[in-house]
Amino acid sequence: MQNLEAANQVPQVLTTKAYIEQVLNQLLLDYQNTQLEREKIALWEANQEFSILGIIELLTDELRGYAFQVITNDFAVKASNILEELEKLKILEIAEIQDWYLASELDYPQMKHYIEILNYLRLLIIEYIRDIKA
Image (cartoon, rainbow, N blue to C red; front, side, top):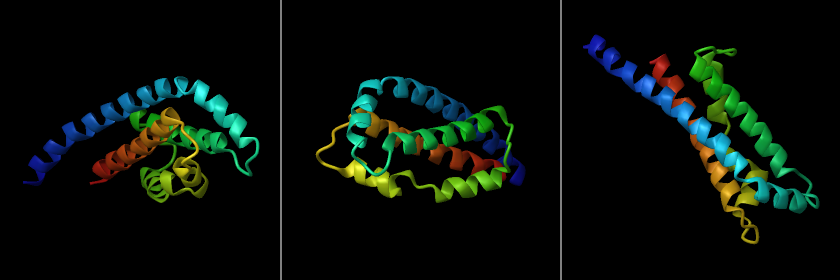
């Protein structure tokens, strides 16, 4: 029975991996489409104590790096360490992101969508690593 479960898991892992690549590629396109909103945010955050764009850039770099490791099967860091980091990283619970995201006077639908997809990519990577560890 274990062999059957393992055999069924391989296609799911490959499908998840392909989907991670698809979401990553879409995320890159989505980022390019947020240029105008990023310019507006840059003006807004000039008066803030923090940089939303800076936080988003750091999160993007981190998650893209993990996604590329999944896609290439080349884990520079142990998969279990990545899993632990991603489980701790709750994008929509970062105080600055939360304050900006929920502020009613700010309307940046493309950037908010970008953050949601970024978080979705995080969840896909978590699922993938859990599946390969099982």
